[in-house]
Amino acid sequence: MKGLAMTKLKLANPGPGRGSSSYPAGYTGS
Image 1 (spheres, rainbow, N blue to C red):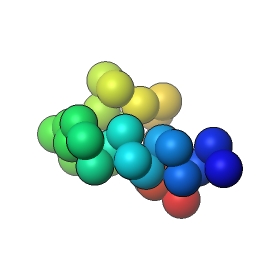
Image 2 (image 1 turned 45 degrees about the horizontal axis):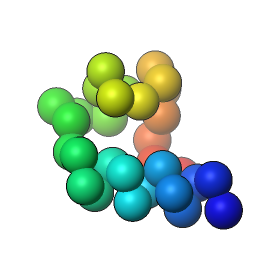
Image 3 (image 1 turned 45 degrees about the vertical axis):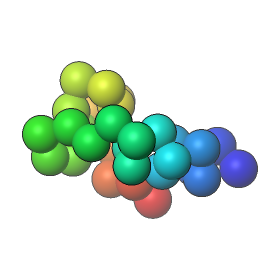
Image 4 (image 1 turned 180 degrees about the vertical axis):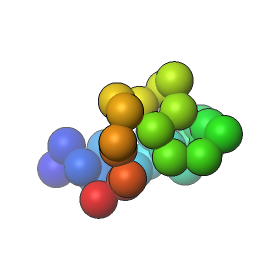
């Protein structure tokens, strides 16, 4: 459930590659 929410956030706010300032370091969207 949490992973799905993070995916939606990532789609809504794409950063400069994986592990951007909007997400924890090493976050791959799994």
